[in-house]
Amino acid sequence: MTFSIFTLFPGLFEGFVRSSILARAIERGLVSVRLIDIRDFATDRHHVCDDAAYGGGPGMVMKPEPLAAALEASGAKAGKRVVYLTPAGRRFSQRMAGELAKEEEILLLCGRYEGIDQRVIDAFVSDEVSIGDYVLSGGEVAAMVVVDAVARLVPGVIAEDSLEEESFSRGLLEYPHYTRPEDFRGMRVPEVLLSGHHEKIRKWRLLKSLEKTMKHRPELLNQDGLPAEARELLREKRNPRLGRGATNPRLERGEREEGDGNERDQGT
Ligand code: ADE
Image (cartoon, rainbow, N blue to C red; front, side, top):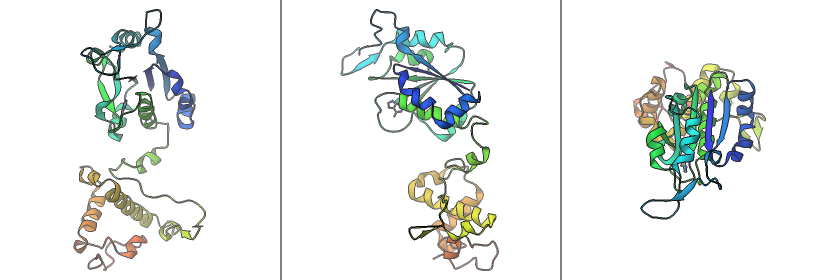
């Protein structure tokens, strides 16, 4: 998969492409990153790439000619995905990252100043993408976010099983992780994780994922695609009288068993 990045500041990407996971993916030929300096396509003596906005107002706008020339030199018209990073775009998500990871090449257009001339968007851009509801000084950091999130979904870049467990992959935020030591400043690793009981661990992790999602991102719980088991647990947590007792301390410790005869009246 190739990421072709159009920017006035290619130097900003130097450390980024040398970073561990991306560098390894590039080395293994799974991913390539091309940096295109838009200024190289400005034909005037001073390589000017911005100008005042028609209609007035503060700030400058990126001129269309250098951008169009840079995009055309990369074959942007040939049905390729051209992503313009802008706070006025559709919100980037794990789902969008997954979609983009199926492409052979993505062209990423980084704006500066007030943005780019609308005619470049009309003629070349397939997706206007925002990474969140805040304004950055340019699209470069947003492009890095997109490259990072997409590259790790390219087959072979990271292990499949780590992708499955990640936040958002099942519509839930990820459960908490622990490593050695077992006791850190009096805070112990939850007992269930030391039990070696895979099914109990799986259930405990699902419960923790659900709790974290309820606390930090409750709106995620209303989407389709939540696994049936998670939906059932959620129903119990929201209405403990219904079921097997989401606040049951045994469940908290991962001791919940299906059909253990204690499924009712535990959840208050
Ligand atoms: N450029 C400036 N702010 C941005 C944002 N939030 N997302 C994507 N590109 C941007």
